[in-house]
Length: 449
Ligand code: NAP
Image 1 (cartoon, rainbow, N blue to C red):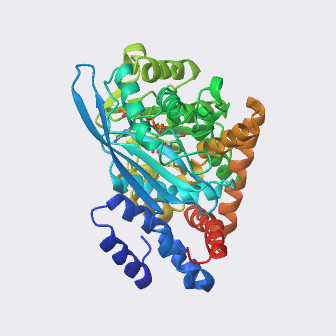
Image 2 (cartoon, rainbow, N blue to C red):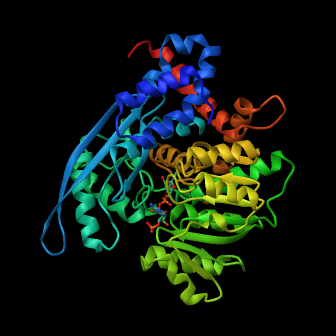
Image 3 (tube, helix red, strand yellow):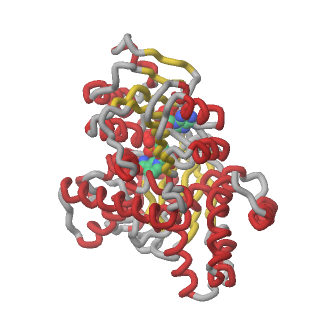
């Protein structure tokens, strides 16, 4: 972990002002370690206190969500929307339904989102929202009632020119549809207020695939930059949700071999590789049957299910953490490196703990931080907003091409700001500084607001 007296002083103040928010502290530290030296060399940002202002969200809305379960019992949950920065466009970022959702988690996600959205080159600010509602085991009608209750309050705070949420953990097409329907009912308007909508009502082709595809495109660019090829690489993927599924699909298309997927109960290790047919089965398990990933071995008994473990002890060339935050610790990172892993592309948000990042950076392997590697999802969300405004739909090919170009441009921006003197690319520094500059310049232009 890089540290300096200035960074330490800055972090001490941040921790004092935001007690009990470890994930937020972690995300800010990851960015501040690069931005503080950068603003010291560019005093205009320091004089305007840009970093200090960027670590205070524009606002946080927190609200009660009451709904009735199938037994007629009243349930009470907490909902949030963190509107972090609209310096370069309307707030934009997902909604997460998970029982571990806290204000700290949503603040870290919204903070990261601001930099990520800036990196895409599209005009989007950063936000994030969600609830401690746990969708696991809930019936369809319970999900619908919860989504409607959540949107009844959220609708006061969002709008196509104000804040445009999308999905995240626990919020997929079904939940977005229920929320969009409720917004439409309450406001009596059909506008692009959410992204990730169904294709029949304003959704975009490639949005479902975009994050997973983008994570793999970014890895492809990192490999190519070093003169390496994707073909034949053995890959460990974690998670088995939206991002993981489409990462697996794209890796396979590019000639890689995926040997793991996981969920919160454990890891599936399939040394023969997860091909298109097996992936279709995973999609059915997770999307249709809403089952656990351990059921994979019922159909493919040659594979192994390792209960309660994450995939990182399994040897691979490339790792794609696509489940959740802090899912790789320093020990697991060291195991990956020792087993010959040469690249990590983060599909989930902040999946690597600080200690794990240090291991990757010290080993000088290819390390793509989430704010760069998983920006493909929000990029296509941005394109969904454009299509909604223009009232037209682009084709799948056109959108995939645009996604590919955007990921390539993000890679170039990281190289521009992250190249060390010896030619090694520090993608973390590149993404942090590259994401910061555009937002900071907009804030400078607005004066003190
Ligand atoms: P998802 O479809 O809900 O899938 C989440 C996956 O992660 C599931 O396999 C889930 O397993 C696993 N998981 C969740 N919490 C976990 C925990 N505490 N420990 C271990 N595994 C856990 O969500 P997603 O959209 O793929 O999102 C995955 C990650 O990507 C998140 O960090 C999200 O913020 C990030 N992301 C998503 C998008 C997007 O477009 N969807 C865009 C950018 C970033 P269970 O089923 O057991 O919970």
